[in-house]
Length: 248
Image 1 (cartoon, helix red, strand yellow):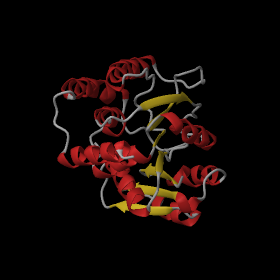
Image 2: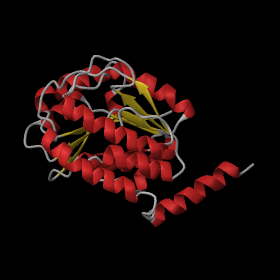
Image 3: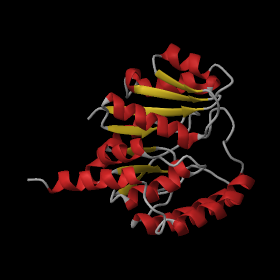
């Protein structure tokens, strides 16, 4: 399996070198792409100096757009799977092998901070929002999810093909909405427990106030998910995948 690690990064120059150094222990940096999402610091320069590929957005478009770029890059380059790995030092490279192994019986595997006691801390308000979103998303995925907003995840071959065609770009689209989209395409989602670090640098992309405000939006989108039409290119892709699976 050709594996690409995609690192969406916004102004992470202070810690990105350490993140890529940790990644290099388990993944050749030639198979790492940093999506510089409109950074105003030396993020792109640090990534190139470390040996990673870099794709730069002229302006900040958000994590969803960054991962959409990464999936398109992966499809063109012939990769089989994509790991999403944050550039702020929270994710631990040693868990990548566990995500890859879990693809044996799933199309998407999420690294959960909360599936077991990992020592990860978050505020009570943020944790309440995360539990609510995870509970509702679990209904769509038809499996128990404890950390639907986790950005540490892997997409296998079928999921990569779907996400290279269409990937949600709104805030939390790269996590919650992508799960719903995958489920509607007949893909399977599961999670495994992982440990995560506190942020090593940078600033959180969203405050708890904004996270709470957007919870209503996410729940509304999930409520419409069953009637929202699937993009035509994904319907064609699903038919092609089904025909391939049924072929002798």
